[in-house]
Amino acid sequence: MKHKQLSGLICFLVLFAAGNSAGAEIGWVRGEVRLNVRTGPSTEYRIVGVLKTGDSVSVLSRGENWTEVETQQSDGLKRGWIPEGYLRAQPPPSVRLGQAEARVVELGTTLATVQKEAEQLRNAHADLASQDGAQQAQIKELTMENMELKAGARYPEWITGAAIFAAGMVLGAWIHRNSARRQPARIRL
Image (cartoon, rainbow, N blue to C red; front, top):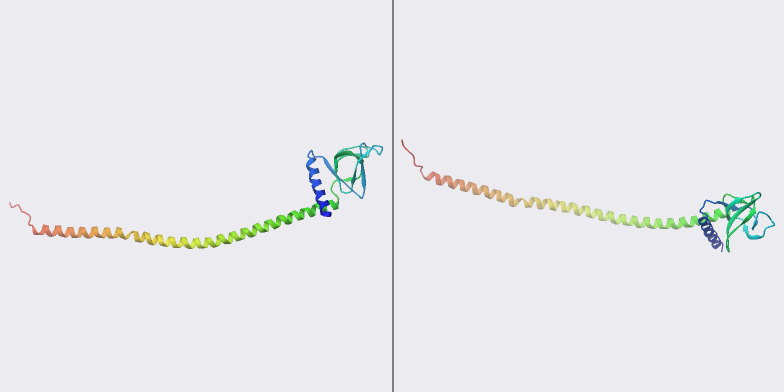
């Protein structure tokens, strides 16, 4: 029951703050009081609502001994006047405690989500690190294999070169041998 009231109060505060976007001064009812909200700045005016400790209001104007306020009541927004001196600039400790408790719950949820995501990231990192090691080993293996293939791919060139050289030597020897058998015709003078 207390949490529902606290949640309702927080929702009210958020809605109230959103509704007062014109930079209106916000005041909080202080002390252990119940204030009558009246239609005018005197006790002779009729009562349009009641404020209790911790309620927030928008201060619309300040008069002599009275403050014009706007507040969210169960039946909608109400404008009225309250006696001066019952408002303070910040919420009372009970409201701030409720806000802090709501923030703690919100932060706890966020923390749990972040921790879960961090664990997922750690697991993904470990998987990637193990894959990285395996990929590095595979790259090293492929590099060695590539070097062996490149070195092995040169042997046809070497064999071709050696064959051309050998053929040239055989052809040269054959030409030299055939040239040696024929006697060149000498011209005698």
